Image (cartoon, rainbow, N blue to C red; front, side, top):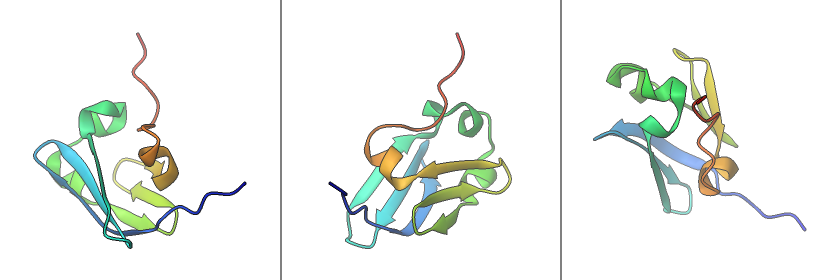
Length: 81
């Protein structure tokens, strides 16, 4: 069974969180600190987000996250212990 994933309409960085507004009007958000590459970035780098039909791309950081992953609580590679 395939689950249709909503597409992003806008995204940005605010108060330590990445937020995504979907075409349906739903909003996803997660702490930038949950992703090692995002955690080490400047606010300007975090706010420089390119949208695709399936996810987000930070060109300054060479980082990509899918909307499906974000919706499931997967914010990228975990920190190594």
